[in-house]
Image (cartoon, rainbow, N blue to C red):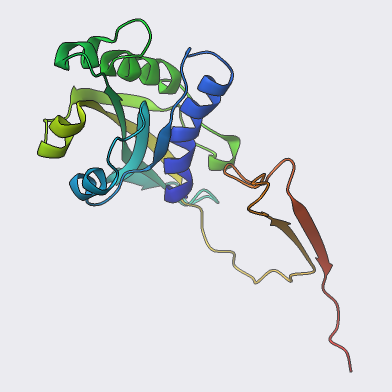
Length: 206
């Protein structure tokens, strides 16, 4: 659930870029690395714009005693990054060809505010934007001329409950990702998997 939320946050941006809404494409994206400074050190000449999402924690929640279980009010951060070879100001402001970090931040807020992300998450209410602010420059950020913005989001995720009785598994559907094609990617299930199996489970052979 939490991992799916991280991926769904980034996917909103990727989908908008693919549809031509933004006028630019994200070149680096994923979940935020634990040691970001080390990540930048090893990923020299980072391709931007970049976007990463990360879980910050559960701040509160409520359990109404239904099948939704504990409704967790959870915080996530979306980090966007831009760069420009001209100067530090252009990295933030953009130059008409490449978006600056301010534009990346505002575009992300516009896309995510009020969003329900994806139906599979079954959010209890639309995404709320809690804050947005620049990330202090680190040594590696300076070396790569990066400007980064962090947007704090709030999601209400139903964590559901365990079933009272075990469910008999009678049929198993599996989508396969063949690396040469790469059609199986989040969000799942894939619309056009590279290959698929449907396994009918019955009594074991005598």
